[in-house]
Image (cartoon, rainbow, N blue to C red; front, side, top):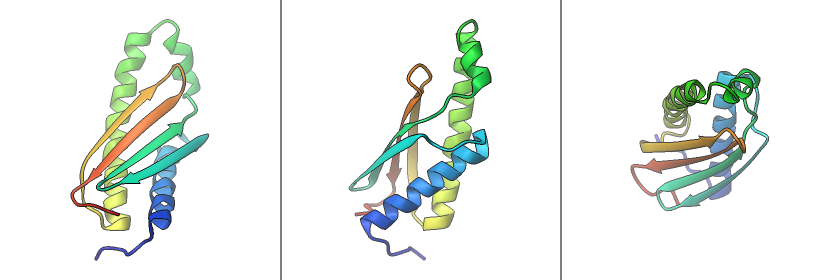
Length: 117
């Protein structure tokens, strides 16, 4: 059963889920975030807080932390998709996510199987 939510309610629910996943994986929430809905897409611009151990390793072992970042992002996308589909009953086609450790900024694009607006 698909939930009937306004655009603002949907944004709030997606951000809550996004932040919950962040707390589950890293033990901390997001510093700031902005979300936009466009047709079948959601764009989330977020300011994260770098995991302190990875921040230290970035200086001398960037190749290693790139692999770790990539692995974390893959897990994040799977958990995020699962939680959104379960909570909001909105089937997801794909999630793209990129994170820049230098600025601690991330962009997540969620593409649903059908328009959500």
